[in-house]
Image 1 (spheres, one colour):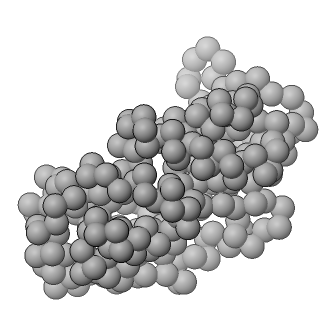
Image 2: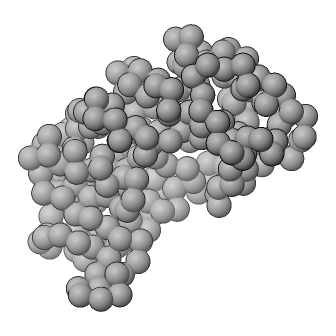
Length: 234
């Protein structure tokens, strides 16, 4: 775990207590809001510096990020390393160039993907496919946060974690960040342990009403969380 990066994320607006739905793992109780992180310049500068250290080791020609949350981090890393940047859309704009890739590149240039987080890895596979499809050579993927769900959820990420062709780096995992936040007295140990259990098997955790009840009881006492309106529905 990169402690400088983890420490920079311990600000009140980052952790959102909620009952929000993810298309990847269903409902979750605590959301790490990386959009709030890049909105705070001091946090963005720390994160970009630490990501740039990892990207520099791969020495790519280009940095690429996909809309939307990864873009500020990718641009910041590119600026620090004085590298050119590619903006990737999720789908063609529908007019003008009608391209998924926005930017200037040449065949056989090397590129590192910079993003805010990885959950199950499917979107990263799509990005790699798009970049390699136009003749670029992907060297790796660097993210701030790896959700790092329990072992039964990690199979979709095997193509990246176990692929020697690409280097995968996360500044921290979600369980590591929870543990560090408790050690730093930013959240309670009780909340940290509850969320680490939820991360291990999110689908099973969310099906048990007692888990939600316990989470609400613990979270309401926390001083460094912000509360989404969905929290009231728990």
